[in-house]
Image 1 (spheres, helix red, strand yellow):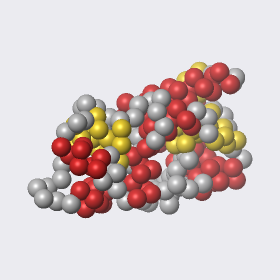
Image 2 (cartoon, helix red, strand yellow; image 1 turned 120 degrees about the horizontal axis):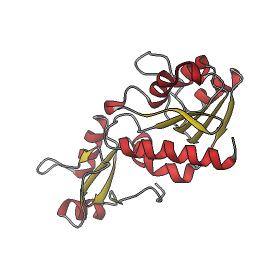
Image 3 (cartoon, helix red, strand yellow; image 1 turned 120 degrees about the vertical axis):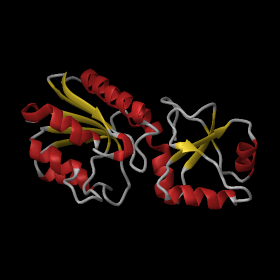
Image 4 (spheres, one colour; image 1 turned 180 degrees about the horizontal axis):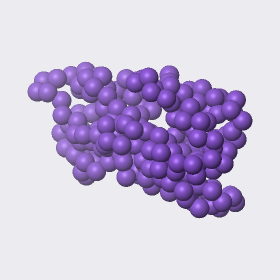
Length: 217
Protein backbone atom coordinates (compact mmCIF):
# COMPACT_ATOMS: atom_id res chain seq x y z
CA UNK A 1 0.00 0.00 0.00
CA UNK A 2 1.09 3.56 -0.64
CA UNK A 3 1.52 6.39 1.86
CA UNK A 4 -1.67 7.89 0.45
CA UNK A 5 -3.51 4.64 1.15
CA UNK A 6 -2.18 4.63 4.71
CA UNK A 7 -3.35 8.19 5.35
CA UNK A 8 -6.77 7.54 3.82
CA UNK A 9 -7.33 4.42 5.89
CA UNK A 10 -6.19 6.08 9.11
CA UNK A 11 -8.49 9.03 8.46
CA UNK A 12 -11.34 6.55 8.10
CA UNK A 13 -10.38 5.01 11.45
CA UNK A 14 -10.35 8.49 13.01
CA UNK A 15 -13.81 9.21 11.57
CA UNK A 16 -15.16 5.96 13.03
CA UNK A 17 -13.77 6.78 16.47
CA UNK A 18 -15.15 10.32 16.30
CA UNK A 19 -18.64 8.93 15.74
CA UNK A 20 -18.30 6.93 18.97
CA UNK A 21 -17.14 9.84 21.16
CA UNK A 22 -19.27 10.29 24.25
CA UNK A 23 -20.56 6.72 24.25
CA UNK A 24 -17.53 4.60 25.18
CA UNK A 25 -16.44 5.89 28.59
CA UNK A 26 -14.70 4.79 30.75
CA UNK A 27 -12.77 3.45 27.76
CA UNK A 28 -11.51 5.68 24.96
CA UNK A 29 -13.20 5.77 21.56
CA UNK A 30 -11.05 3.86 19.07
CA UNK A 31 -11.45 3.25 15.36
CA UNK A 32 -9.94 0.30 13.49
CA UNK A 33 -9.76 -0.42 9.78
CA UNK A 34 -8.37 -3.68 8.40
CA UNK A 35 -7.22 -3.52 4.80
CA UNK A 36 -5.43 -5.48 2.09
CA UNK A 37 -3.85 -3.89 -0.95
CA UNK A 38 -5.45 -0.57 -0.05
CA UNK A 39 -8.97 -2.01 0.13
CA UNK A 40 -10.96 -2.17 3.35
CA UNK A 41 -11.74 -5.67 4.59
CA UNK A 42 -13.47 -4.70 7.83
CA UNK A 43 -13.87 -1.72 10.14
CA UNK A 44 -15.26 -0.97 13.57
CA UNK A 45 -15.31 1.47 16.47
CA UNK A 46 -15.43 0.87 20.20
CA UNK A 47 -18.94 -0.11 21.27
CA UNK A 48 -21.10 1.68 23.80
CA UNK A 49 -19.79 1.35 27.34
CA UNK A 50 -16.29 0.67 26.02
CA UNK A 51 -16.68 -2.95 24.93
CA UNK A 52 -16.11 -4.75 22.65
CA UNK A 53 -12.96 -2.93 21.56
CA UNK A 54 -12.64 -1.73 17.98
CA UNK A 55 -9.90 -4.19 17.00
CA UNK A 56 -11.84 -7.11 18.45
CA UNK A 57 -14.91 -6.29 16.36
CA UNK A 58 -12.98 -5.57 13.17
CA UNK A 59 -11.02 -8.82 13.42
CA UNK A 60 -14.22 -10.78 13.98
CA UNK A 61 -15.75 -9.16 10.90
CA UNK A 62 -12.63 -9.77 8.80
CA UNK A 63 -12.31 -13.44 9.73
CA UNK A 64 -9.71 -15.27 7.65
CA UNK A 65 -9.16 -12.16 5.54
CA UNK A 66 -7.20 -10.64 8.44
CA UNK A 67 -4.30 -12.97 7.66
CA UNK A 68 -1.56 -10.88 6.03
CA UNK A 69 -3.63 -7.69 6.25
CA UNK A 70 -2.79 -4.29 7.74
CA UNK A 71 -4.67 -2.88 10.71
CA UNK A 72 -5.02 0.90 11.11
CA UNK A 73 -5.92 1.86 14.67
CA UNK A 74 -6.34 5.30 16.20
CA UNK A 75 -4.88 4.29 19.58
CA UNK A 76 -2.12 1.91 20.57
CA UNK A 77 -3.55 -1.64 20.90
CA UNK A 78 -3.87 -2.73 24.52
CA UNK A 79 -1.54 -5.28 26.09
CA UNK A 80 -3.98 -6.45 28.76
CA UNK A 81 -7.70 -6.23 29.46
CA UNK A 82 -9.10 -5.41 32.89
CA UNK A 83 -11.75 -8.06 32.25
CA UNK A 84 -9.11 -10.74 31.73
CA UNK A 85 -10.20 -11.28 28.12
CA UNK A 86 -7.63 -11.54 25.33
CA UNK A 87 -6.09 -8.15 24.63
CA UNK A 88 -6.23 -6.43 21.27
CA UNK A 89 -2.52 -7.01 20.69
CA UNK A 90 -3.01 -10.72 21.36
CA UNK A 91 -5.97 -10.87 18.98
CA UNK A 92 -4.08 -9.05 16.23
CA UNK A 93 -1.14 -11.44 16.57
CA UNK A 94 -3.36 -14.53 16.56
CA UNK A 95 -5.21 -13.30 13.48
CA UNK A 96 -1.94 -13.19 11.55
CA UNK A 97 -2.01 -9.55 10.50
CA UNK A 98 1.22 -8.50 8.84
CA UNK A 99 1.25 -4.86 9.87
CA UNK A 100 -0.26 -2.64 12.55
CA UNK A 101 -0.28 1.14 12.17
CA UNK A 102 -1.54 3.25 15.06
CA UNK A 103 -1.85 6.96 15.52
CA UNK A 104 -1.65 7.80 19.23
CA UNK A 105 0.22 6.26 22.13
CA UNK A 106 -1.70 4.97 25.14
CA UNK A 107 -0.06 5.66 28.53
CA UNK A 108 -2.58 3.53 30.45
CA UNK A 109 -1.00 0.87 32.68
CA UNK A 110 -2.59 -1.88 30.56
CA UNK A 111 -0.92 -0.50 27.43
CA UNK A 112 2.07 1.87 27.71
CA UNK A 113 4.04 0.30 24.87
CA UNK A 114 3.56 -3.31 25.91
CA UNK A 115 0.97 -4.06 23.22
CA UNK A 116 3.17 -2.90 20.33
CA UNK A 117 6.06 -4.75 21.95
CA UNK A 118 4.08 -7.99 21.83
CA UNK A 119 3.28 -7.40 18.16
CA UNK A 120 6.93 -6.83 17.29
CA UNK A 121 7.90 -10.06 19.08
CA UNK A 122 5.27 -11.84 16.97
CA UNK A 123 7.03 -10.63 13.81
CA UNK A 124 4.44 -8.01 12.95
CA UNK A 125 5.52 -4.71 11.43
CA UNK A 126 4.46 -1.88 13.75
CA UNK A 127 4.30 1.82 12.89
CA UNK A 128 3.41 4.53 15.38
CA UNK A 129 2.36 8.14 14.96
CA UNK A 130 0.57 8.20 11.61
CA UNK A 131 -1.75 11.25 11.74
CA UNK A 132 -1.32 11.43 15.51
CA UNK A 133 -1.95 15.17 15.39
CA UNK A 134 -5.30 14.58 13.66
CA UNK A 135 -6.34 11.81 16.06
CA UNK A 136 -5.26 13.53 19.30
CA UNK A 137 -8.60 15.30 19.80
CA UNK A 138 -10.18 11.89 20.39
CA UNK A 139 -8.13 11.32 23.54
CA UNK A 140 -7.92 14.74 25.14
CA UNK A 141 -10.32 13.71 27.89
CA UNK A 142 -8.92 10.21 28.32
CA UNK A 143 -5.37 11.54 28.67
CA UNK A 144 -6.52 14.23 31.12
CA UNK A 145 -8.13 11.67 33.40
CA UNK A 146 -5.06 9.42 33.28
CA UNK A 147 -2.83 12.36 34.17
CA UNK A 148 -4.94 14.05 36.84
CA UNK A 149 -7.72 11.65 37.85
CA UNK A 150 -10.22 14.25 36.62
CA UNK A 151 -12.17 14.51 33.36
CA UNK A 152 -11.63 17.41 31.02
CA UNK A 153 -14.49 19.95 31.02
CA UNK A 154 -15.08 22.13 27.97
CA UNK A 155 -17.28 25.13 27.32
CA UNK A 156 -19.48 23.90 24.48
CA UNK A 157 -22.78 24.58 22.73
CA UNK A 158 -24.24 21.13 23.28
CA UNK A 159 -23.72 17.52 24.37
CA UNK A 160 -22.62 15.95 21.07
CA UNK A 161 -19.37 14.02 21.54
CA UNK A 162 -19.27 14.37 25.33
CA UNK A 163 -19.67 11.79 28.08
CA UNK A 164 -22.15 14.03 29.83
CA UNK A 165 -22.96 17.39 31.37
CA UNK A 166 -20.84 18.59 34.27
CA UNK A 167 -23.35 19.14 37.08
CA UNK A 168 -21.84 19.81 40.50
CA UNK A 169 -24.18 19.33 43.44
CA UNK A 170 -25.43 22.51 45.16
CA UNK A 171 -22.56 23.92 47.18
CA UNK A 172 -20.15 21.22 46.01
CA UNK A 173 -16.52 22.18 45.55
CA UNK A 174 -15.84 22.16 41.80
CA UNK A 175 -12.49 20.41 42.10
CA UNK A 176 -14.12 17.81 44.32
CA UNK A 177 -16.92 17.36 41.80
CA UNK A 178 -14.36 16.72 39.08
CA UNK A 179 -12.69 14.10 41.28
CA UNK A 180 -16.07 12.44 41.73
CA UNK A 181 -16.73 12.35 38.00
CA UNK A 182 -13.24 11.01 37.35
CA UNK A 183 -13.72 8.19 39.85
CA UNK A 184 -16.96 7.30 38.06
CA UNK A 185 -15.05 6.90 34.79
CA UNK A 186 -15.99 10.09 32.97
CA UNK A 187 -13.32 11.52 30.69
CA UNK A 188 -14.85 14.42 28.75
CA UNK A 189 -17.68 16.63 30.04
CA UNK A 190 -19.28 19.81 28.80
CA UNK A 191 -20.86 22.85 30.35
CA UNK A 192 -22.78 25.60 28.53
CA UNK A 193 -20.46 28.26 27.16
CA UNK A 194 -20.80 31.58 29.02
CA UNK A 195 -22.86 29.94 31.76
CA UNK A 196 -22.20 30.37 35.50
CA UNK A 197 -20.52 26.98 35.88
CA UNK A 198 -18.22 27.74 32.96
CA UNK A 199 -17.30 31.06 34.54
CA UNK A 200 -16.59 29.43 37.90
CA UNK A 201 -14.46 26.70 36.34
CA UNK A 202 -12.57 29.23 34.26
CA UNK A 203 -11.81 31.24 37.38
CA UNK A 204 -10.16 28.16 38.88
CA UNK A 205 -8.30 27.26 35.69
CA UNK A 206 -10.39 24.10 35.30
CA UNK A 207 -12.14 24.90 32.00
CA UNK A 208 -10.97 24.17 28.46
CA UNK A 209 -12.25 25.43 25.15
CA UNK A 210 -14.13 22.97 22.99
CA UNK A 211 -11.84 21.08 20.66
CA UNK A 212 -12.60 19.55 17.28
CA UNK A 213 -11.00 17.18 14.79
CA UNK A 214 -8.32 19.71 13.82
CA UNK A 215 -7.55 20.88 17.36
CA UNK A 216 -4.83 19.67 19.68
CA UNK A 217 -5.65 18.42 23.19
